[in-house]
Picture 1 (tube, rainbow over the protein chains, first blue to last red):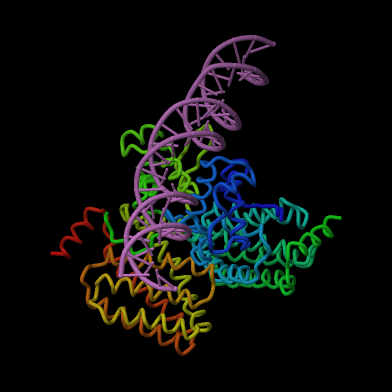
Picture 2 (picture 1 turned 30 degrees about the vertical axis):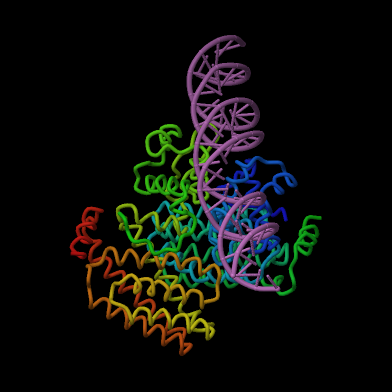
Length: 259
Length: 259
DNA sequence: CCTGCTCGTATCGTATGACTTTATCGCAGA
DNA sequence: TCTGCGATAAAGTCATACGATACGAGCAGG
């Protein structure tokens, strides 16, 4: 899929071997290429894909185990785990989903969760923000206005805007959900009708309103406007999601966009 | 701390060597015994604690890396990561916190997040529940009423009650936050004034109200009553949290309780 | 023919030693 | 003082070996 991944490098150094193996296996599980049955036999995998040692393979499996994607039992083998035991909120698991065909239910679930959480985060941010928080949010907003609509720096600024709001909420556990928000934003960028200037401008206005509400310490307003922004994003995303979306469509869309 | 851990065995087979090492290291990081600096040198740890091979040690480190607790860089060493890069919502990370002194800010954060999320989950459950969901929630509720107040089975039923509600909400990503709820419940049991019959009875009534609201498909009511239950839990928990709580106090409290 | 026991095999867990890669730090030279 | 190169330390990778055990196949007995 080769989606530009804006998430900071968390676990999987893509240049490290075990990270590559982990991602490869993870994608195989997420796409459903490997169901909830046996994993590709150790040695077969080693031999066919890239010849890696048992060490690298096992460390990759340990990473997947830690994220709930596989269950290794002493002698029965290493099986892919059922979906409801995956740590779907793990940043790596979220980003691995970009390598698979878009799953409409999953994306809807993500937006639903975001819709529950991010307005609350905005409310807290309005009530608790420090001057430093304001500065950080404003800086991110400036990054969105001073760069071309869908440029790389603009997108990063957008993600930084939302992360800064979560940080301003001063709740360490809530902050872990910022990765859910950034994931939905990336899904929107990927799925919505491309080069949509109107959407961009409207989104910019939404962001400004949120920023102002936070500056004014108006928690309810910040929450309401954040909720509105989430709804708008979801709608923009769903324009594409209605049809059966596959990697093939997406590639076509991206090609159209670039040329 | 030796808290009875009610979370289902996720990653860390406690009988497996790498799991023990991972937990030991994780607790050292969470308690702050290891700051955001170097980890205990590889060989030292191997030699002093339990002599484990490099294999086991490295696999433990990989688990911690996957959960964001440590960052391993080729030459600079394996350092404990700053707290804001931990996956605090990971079930294992949550349960490892029970091995450390209670951190009031952290527990408040957990409750705050729960207060944002669980009422929404209850609302969705009321709107989307299937007959099977109802049966599951009812079974859990019966488990709470038909057993002695703070018995093991009762506590498990309590946790099952909340998990069943999340399941009924039919949102895979939301469901991952059920572990946050179960963690707060365990913190409550650990911290509140023990053998508090009044609290138990009141809690039982709250649970019944929530169950009825879900049966009646009244989303708003279910959400409101769930919010109330969360607030009550928090208050019961904070009666103890006001003072400086240490493992020592807790042990005393538990001893008092048992004799 | 069916049941049950035993043994072999596959696979994970653990251990060990050696070699490679990479990034940091310090030294030397400009 | 600044620059750059090399020594070095730690993680990463590989190969190999052995132990333990769950599962299944095959054999023996009813």
